[in-house]
Amino acid sequence: MAMSKAKTLPEEIIIDILYLLPVKSIGLWRCVSKQWNNFLSDPQFIKSHFNLHAHKQEEKLILVNWFRQLHTIIFDHYEIYNEIDGISRKLNFDQLSDNWVTVAGSCNGLVLVLDRENIIFLINPTTLKYHKVPVFDLSLPLRGSNNRRSCNMYGLGYDVVSDDYKVVNLSYYDTENYEYWADSFVDMYSVRKGVWKRLETPYDHSLTDLASGVLINGALHWLACRKTEYSTLIAAFDLTDEKFLELPGPLDLSNNCFMCNLAAIRGCLSICTSISRDNDTISFWMMKEYGVKESWTKFKITEPNVDRSLSTLLCSITDDDVLFDIDEELVVYDMKENQRMDLMVDVKHMGEVQTFIDSLISPSFVQETEG
Image (cartoon, rainbow, N blue to C red):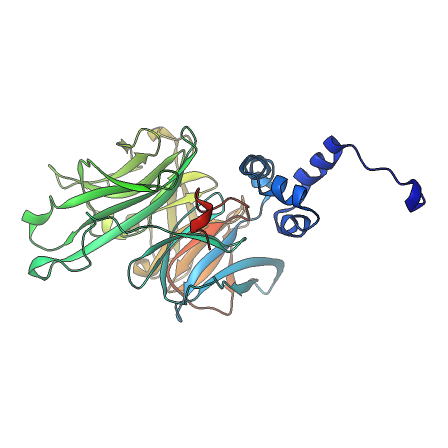
């Protein structure tokens, strides 16, 4: 068709096409016109676009390397000699230096990260937008009176009812003196409101598990200690009700919490336990039906001469592949074929490893505070 006779597509068809664009293409199409930029930047478009594409997105990894830099890793699906190549990319944020300590949570394409000054940032690794979370005036100092050092565990999740992203900080004083065990706190930051608040907690948080909260079914999950009995349990913080509840474990965790860790596998709450390992297997449990004790299912993976003190269940990257940290090396297991594959990457990770997906979601509800 000659250009002079070309007709403009109906607006509804153009909109349908824009919704089908992959995340990486949106930025280019925003440059077409002011009208397109406004439409493609509208929060309602971004939310609908995410809901349409979320289940199609491949999981990526994000971590802090030994040089305190943030890196993302995508997987090269070409496998040879029991290896999977990981392609890493360093993230560079305007006005933010490489001073990171760890990643502490992930939800809907947003990632929670901490720097060496214990400052919290909410970032979008895809758009490179960020939001600096303000310091809470009631938060525990890194080192308080009597030289008592504080410990912190974090979590990030989305409250679908209030359409709000929430950062949760569980903190307590690290001490061997039991009289201080009551000094544990739960603080929550609302990204939409831009404010912190302190909540009640019935738990003393386990001194053995400083991992981030595992997000499943609209709740963040940690291993915790009950104040009255000092027994270990799985505590879930409901992001909508902003209250704690307890989930049944697959076995008694009281005497085995030192080697346990929680993870999200195939969208299910999972736990790796020390007592289910022997010299050549790592076993973990998956809660296939949330909240139902009888749905805990045991899985075994062959790993000759595994050091039980140095193996951590991290996450699932496909329906069949599970990621472990074994002796500070990232290892992928194909659960269907019971096959071990080393993840070959050019970065050495420090701290936690999280998964994320590409999205356009803003890390702040206030545009002026974004990077």
